[in-house]
Amino acid sequence: MPGGGVVAVTGTTDVNRVEAPVTVRAYLIVAFAAFGGIFFGYDTGWMGGVLAMPYFIRQYTGLDYPETTGLKGDALTAYTKAFVIPQWQQSLVTSILSAGTFFGAIIAGDLADFIGRRLTIILGCLIFTIGCILQTASTGLNVMVGGRLIAGFGVGFISSIVILYMSEIAPRKVRGAVVAGYQFCITIGILLANCVVYATQKRDDTGSYRIPIAVQFLWAIILGTGLALLPDSPRFFVRKGKLDKAAAALARVRGQPVDSDYIQDELAEIIANHEYEMSILPATTYLGSWAACFKGKISSPSSNARRTTLGIVMQMMQQLTGINFIFYFGTVFFKQLGTISDPFLISLVTTLVNVLSTPFSFVMVEKLGRRNLLVYGAALMVTFQFITAIIGATAGKPELDNQNATKAMIAFICLNIASFATTWGPCAWIVIGEIFPLTIRSRGVGLATASNWFWNCIIGVITPYLVADQPHSAKLGSHVFFMWGGLCCISFLFAYFFVPETKGLTLEQVDKMLEESTPRTSSKWKPHSTFAAEMHLAEKHIEVPVATTTEVHEPKHETV
Ligand code: BGC
Image (cartoon, rainbow, N blue to C red; front, side):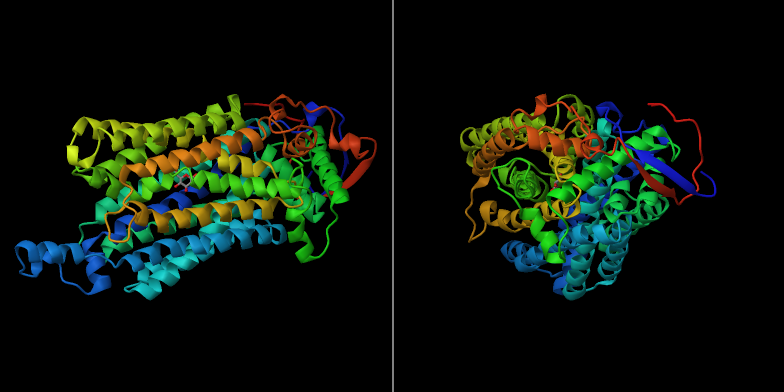
């Protein structure tokens, strides 16, 4: 509508018209945001490798390279063993990132309601860049720790708000697949970090660790610049009461003219749903709006308390599947098995399995649904982890030096990774983007993401003490897979009893489904009325001034 004007928005009573058809361009806009996953994956992936780099160790500890000491025999062996970054420093620089991301995710959830989803992500990129500058410049522990904390803060912003943004703008039919694309980017980020670290690890200059750190500037530039050109979430504008901007943003993300009937119907449904939510839980003070995340009875599937708990526990259980045990600690674990000589090769295999199996989830998540994938995925992980543990406790004992048993264990660990990558990896993110009502969505997603990073950190800190061959370690060895398998049993029960099916519904329909069904009956629930009809928006017009110049065409029909 060149020059501006007014569009009268009228809701629909037709449940099939609550989302506008989408063009290819619109799909591309949504898919771009998935790029945020690269930050997440890359940033968790590079530190482990850098900590083991000889140049980095020498710089941080002041110790000479073992081969230049002139020592021989046992003295050299003892010196080489001691030529490492002290354990407490390793723990500190690794886990400080998660501390930053934990707080970053919570604060970002808050901020995304004030300045918008898009600006929060761009701000996350800026903060991340400052953290990166400090890390790249660092030559000692203090600056590195400060840089990691700040960069982590930025990653917290990005990892939670990208999920929120994508879930709010993605068309319902591909929302799961698009968020699974974010998970795919996480896996690519981990792989890229492994490759870059491998390429620079032998350098005898600061480039060995500075190059892997500095590569990250690229991610920040691409995501930040790209998002600066994209529209914000129409749901954010509805929440703010800026209906003109909501209409313009919706028209852009759907690739439709702003005054098309489709845009009107979808916008009216979002407005009506928001009015409905506000009528149940009116906005109060700032603290009151945080308290709203925990309002209602936990026993009621649609209460805010239940949804917030669902999101937090969902991300906790994702971490307790033990996947990061393999990514953070796999190298050391495989070495302990005694038959593996090239640790990089093994970490490359595990990260490759992760990358290559994730795309299967794009289709599975829309065909089989989130709930099914979570239930079956947990069952598969229980099976594969228990088999790994049983082989490790019998034929695979290190003292037996049984190559075939070790190979079988690695095969089952890879099957376990593939099971995670196609189920809990993507679905945990998809579900947290879908279960919250608009009134608490950004905070809910922030809290759930913070839970992911919290447990991520706990696992990073405790696993060395569970498995490593160190004085204060529980020395579980491959028995640790009994523990992860046991925890996956809990994930299975959690998914079966508590996770609803959200496939194919608009975010507003998810709200209704949670009110009218239980997790176990949710997959049979069908939309039967619209919020616009319920809030009587189908009978009246809402005048929406059109702020942005948007081309007017005949309403477009679905082109994909
Ligand atoms: C998890 C990460 C994990 C990654 C592996 C993500 O969904 O949240 O902690 O490292 O998957 O692909």
